Amino acid sequence: MGIVKIKDKTFKTSIPEAEILKKVQVVADRINKDFEGKKPVFLAVLNGSFIFAADLMRMITIPSEISFVKYASYEGTSSTGSMKTLMGINQDLAGRHVIIVEDIVDSGFTMAHMIEELKKMNPASVEICSLLVKPGNLKVNLDINYAVMEIPNDFIVGYGLDYDQEGRNLRDIYTIVE
Ligand code: 5GP
Ligand code: MG
Image (tube, rainbow, N blue to C red; front, side):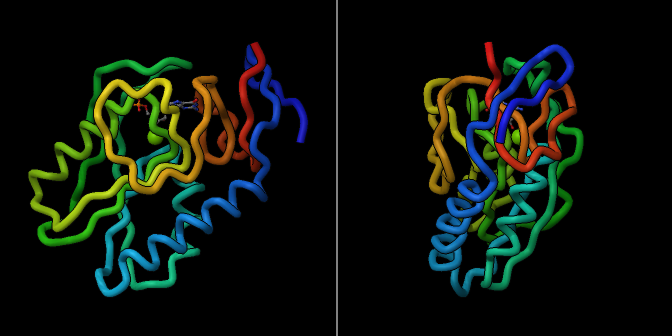
């Protein structure tokens, strides 16, 4: 707990690791129940979701698979609308139950883009599992079935999330201090 400095910005602890893990477990339990007998494919969105995906995946007790995708959409501390696929889906998802694993849904553009791409592959179902959601910033209509936590619009780092590529290794989640 405390204050960290990353480059030109200061951040303070807002969600301790223990609280994060407790809440991830609640969502994992729901997924274990909802997808029993369905062998879901988790699709984790790099880079930000790698810690969340690793923790979530180890709380999943039903048969499942995981794969990774990567898009470029975010520069500095504010979201842009444009989107590039850096690492696409290289797996047959036809008839599969897909669970997208995302670090944070901000404007929702990344998820909207990804769901559009996914639907072309005829999956049996697509759900969003996001560690964090900023409901105040949503600019598209999204059904987020598995949201671990909702937060205000402030910029955060830690638990996989970066500020200019740094801070991903912080165990807790930190909020920017203005
Ligand atoms: P969206 O497309 O929903 O606007 O943006 C989603 C992506 O923006 C997230 O996957 C994440 O990489 C990044 N992002 C949004 N808000 C934050 C934030 O507060 N902190 C960090 N580190 N990344 C964020
Ligand atoms: Mg992300």
